[in-house]
Length: 185
Image 1 (cartoon, rainbow, N blue to C red):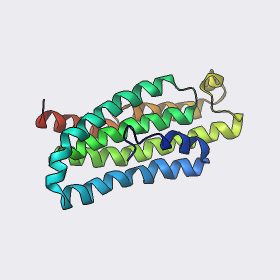
Image 2 (tube, rainbow, N blue to C red):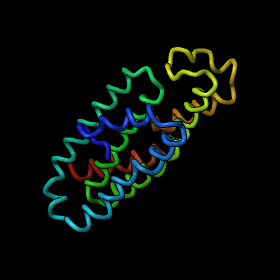
Image 3 (tube, one colour):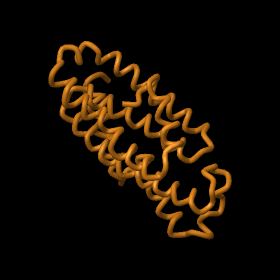
Image 4 (cartoon, rainbow, N blue to C red):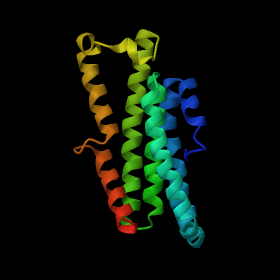
């Protein structure tokens, strides 16, 4: 699970990996940490999970804020998606350790929908890289004029990754927020 300060491997791994590797990494491998928390940490060690919940909350909230600020400073498209994934996985961890049904359902839903949206975004960035041989964001101005269907696809999945209210990421995030506020407002 790429939580701050154990997240430094993720953006570099995405930048060095080919498109297929980034898709697998974002779609499957990032979710294994959440599965491990659900399957082993909460079930085998419930007292320890309860004891470390405040620490995990602080680490996750700091990670969400830090990853969001760092995402805004990036110029490489793969790093932008990777740092937003760090923020989403922090939100998943908050939902898991809220220890109620809304948080667990929300974190599972967020993991599934994040796997689809981030994989689609990495696929789109891979397509752009194959066509233009760069991932720097400033070179893609006016993309909707030359590739309107692709630009629409890219916009839809960016909005889904952002958590637009009609998307599946929003449903997972709202469940996590409701669970978090029911534990400690």
